[in-house]
Image (cartoon, rainbow, N blue to C red; front, side, top):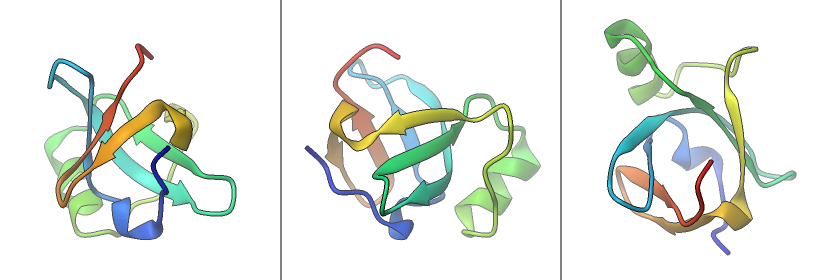
Length: 81
């Protein structure tokens, strides 16, 4: 199981095949949940990449136990969402 932190905000969420699912808008480190904007527009992606975004009502919740690997730029899930 991966351990999520606020450092993961702004990273891309990728599926097991390497396709981009969305961008991480916020991380709840206590609950170990990442909130992901499934189809960010260019402005949203830029703001999230700088770490200034927040989760909103259309974000997907991804639990840490669904994430297999975390790199400097992405989180990769091991299950279909």
